[in-house]
Figure (tube, rainbow, N blue to C red):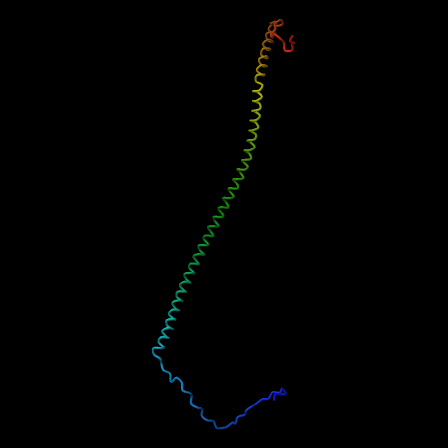
Length: 180
């Protein structure tokens, strides 16, 4: 057995002999190689057709790749031109915006100045209106006072010229006279 494992080995020893018999002939197979005429031509033609199709597909793929590369390069050129045009337009619009903002600020200052000037004119108009209202309101009073003053000056001139108005009564009753 094997080193105390409890497994026994069975070994068979064959007798060696110096004389060997010739090996037996090989079994009968398909026969000798013969070229198959038309059957092999179909397979070769099919392989040739596959090769032609593969060449055609590779040529088409190369053409499509060149066309795609040309389209890509054209697209990249167009994109670069568009970016440049957009950048230029953005710069122009930014400058226009800055000009408009400057004009807006100038117009705002002008508006403030015009508004303060308008307020001054409105105040002056209001003062003129108040003065006119006062003149209209007291016109009759002033007219009477002026007429009385002219009359008084005429009498004063006459007195200075030598006239005597001491006995002349100008009004029937005095202002402060009592009524009976």
